[in-house]
Length: 94
Image (cartoon, rainbow, N blue to C red):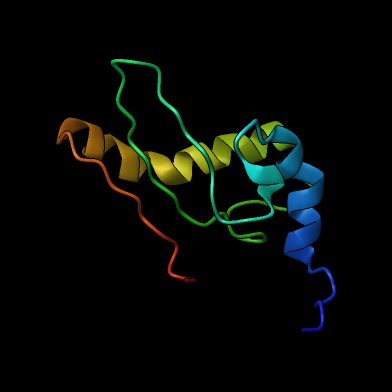
């Protein structure tokens, strides 16, 4: 299999998002993360796409991108908390 050339999204992730990723993010090389809640805690998980050129721009500073990412997912997360549901919402690309 031939590797594809890096895209604008790859560059965006490498420059702005990967430095914010913590332990358990697998260096953002896979669509997975390891989450281990503390004892007696619950998790509410949600995921949605942050689209370069729509939700964020290449020149946006990392802290602004992070705030935008929280805003995109907030609308999905709050109803889950109130209804005590646990769900993972994909962005439709696989």
